[in-house]
Image 1: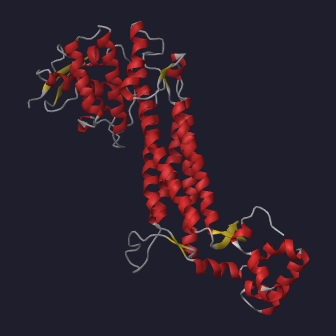
Image 2: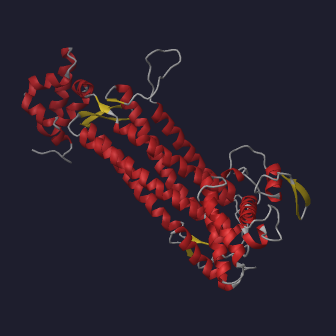
Image 3: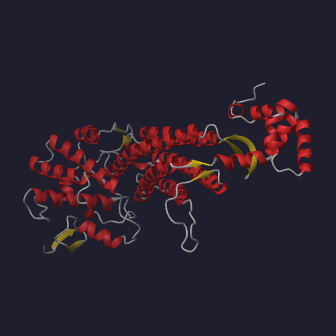
Length: 457
């Protein structure tokens, strides 16, 4: 197809005839050549849903001709379903609070709509990116609304993935319930417990994460669509402002609502910071769990599934690469939270200028955590326990003497340790069985007694 000439307030520019985007996208491609990654696909799809809601409201109120509306709605459905993904070439980082991305989707929907109407791309007299697709809208209400829609769908996916991860940890808790091992504090041996109890602790943390993530949707429910430039609704008719929220609920299936103070919703991004903080909390738990599992694997108390060769020079070496990858994803999410915080805090007046960075960081964290949970779940399912190795550490640890404090007292325990040290023996359990009796030792070190939340006489 031949190139076409398009115009904007700055002049004319040639646009490749084969593309659906136009002059505004072409300028942005030249202005923001970061190469840091394109705008998130889930954000593009959410924007298409928002544009669909706006077109429906404008059509129903008579502001948009039926033929134009039909073309716009069909194009929106195509983009919302993942179509035309190669027509959104812009870098995620861009100036203008997301205006370039808004212009990009306006142009793609307009030109695809023109095609569906049987007209050539660029025939904006028949269907215009701004006059028709962007009718009664501003980047400042469309873009943040789309971020909330995209984040809500991603939160739902993440909630399901985290629930599956929690389930895997709980199954290991039951499987390893009777395996006595050592707890560890300060990177040193501590009192005995069970391997299952350790998994229960991780499952509990993930359970809290699951609840927090589920509740995040409430934070994102209020949107400023209809507020246009600064939240006052300037340039949009009153009946449209009220109807467009209803249409957005229908299009997305989400329980979104119009903010009581659209100015406040437009100028502040604190809800994104709150959600990002909850994602960071989950990332911290992932980091902790991955680190603990690597240590247990190093000690030989558990065996991680072998997923790939670990060295290009050491034959037979297998590394905990899944846990290392999960740790790196968690660190990225923690860093992203700082970006969300900075982007929200540096907003001025009635706009969040750095919304593109905020959106990329927040949606990036959601994608990372979802993929991490899906990666970790089967890996944890494949963990095996080495009960012999666990028993080896327990039997030789001086710390197991703590389990006998209630029955023999502190001074007697201290004396037994001194005697054990002088004996030259290595197995404290065997030594205590001789001194205190096998039955007493078995009772004190039984899973039932160790996990009884206080000793039983």
